[in-house]
Length: 226
Image (cartoon, rainbow, N blue to C red):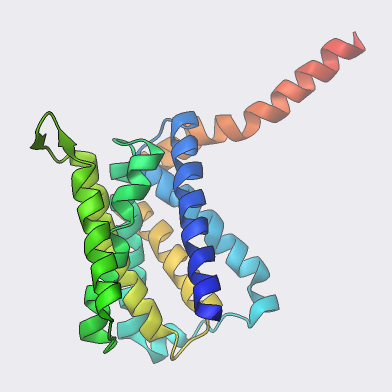
């Protein structure tokens, strides 16, 4: 029963993440990689702060299990970067519909790597979900796949790999540890692949946005006082 509760909570959380990140991308006009850096970097810091209260972080686990931790880090990193590139081309609802294909890809991968089994009803449900995603691209009596949908579905495949490798990693390390490495890896990879754009966006748009509200409040206080 607990798996159902956690699954529903995970779906709601992912939908909230998708909508909020879309709203963020509308307010902060920066490169997709910079959005990935902002969110995953912030997540890594939060995990680092609150991690000790939820089992702690095993910093040496990457040396103990380099293959599995490396797979988690790489899949999360590229998944985030691809996701934010696709999200710029779609609205939040279509992004979430396309990304829901992660359930299908995750199921397929779990058959091979986790020895999972599915009932006929579960298989039917996954096929129904796939059909629903395909029919959202039906316009003017023909199927025309949007570029953004293809990118988001590609991100879903990569995130499915992340989910499967995370399931394997959970046998060796705690949740806090692999979340820390997954988020830290994304932020680090973005900086390594495109340092100039990331630093330019942070020093320009991101920093100005973060300091804009305090400046407005200060100006309001000054005008009220005068």
